[in-house]
Length: 368
Ligand code: PMV
Image (cartoon, rainbow, N blue to C red; front, side, top):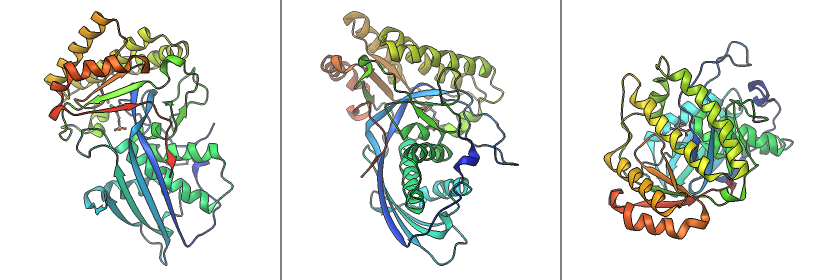
């Protein structure tokens, strides 16, 4: 089992200049990560950062992604991190502190970073202000580019190590980003029944039944505004939360159940777990102190309309939520035509400016 120490790059060459380009997708959790825990690192005297309080599992998406080019130039002095940041072709100063912090966090694992000047040129395939978190795809795309640099400095790295460390680095940028490296289904966080699962990086879960192949996710954009409560703050409110311990235990149980379901193809059971997880996530928000609500009236209207459609038509469609008001509508490919018709007829009016994004399960980061 890989520990933090194993991710410290120790032998590497040097290079003058290089260019890399990767795309990395967003992901949607089925069993949610909400809450972090304190843990000693395997590096003496260090604390591990971004360790999830419970394991989670997600579908990797396909169309919602970040495309990042990394230009690398060797520089003379290696005192500080130096980089330029372009977002959709234009300099973007307000993203820089997050990248600076990311570099500081990962420096111990990538000690070569200060020897280079970087040009990070990044864009999303989904609208910037759609309320879809771009931190997962963004951090994953940057992390995997940095691994391409490390691989150029040390060509002996194996593919397994490359992707495990890319996920490890992405986690340090934004927790759930570690689930955006490899598809189609990824587990992050140690779970007794998932071999190789780790708190430090995501691992692909590959025993997936035909029923879930090309599973669809249509994202209904209910509220495209900035989140009132950041996920960093929300995670912190799970400390001293009255239901935290039960919630963490429940996530372990739900992961055991969904593992069986994904393997056996039991969609009815899948729906129960996924919808309950979404509502539990929001219940945790509503019962923390201070409490908050991220759902909007239209979120609830969509849920109720979807439940009515499901029971009247016997079509296995369900919803999940992330930390916001938007609704992810999940359904098998075989029901696509009927569900899209239903969305057009009955749900579009609840979306801001009638907007929604059609996505489906994908296979993770790609080098362009
Ligand atoms: O990766 P973060 O810190 O933005 O947290 C993501 C939390 C949820 O999206 C609500 C759940 C999850 O597991 O993705």
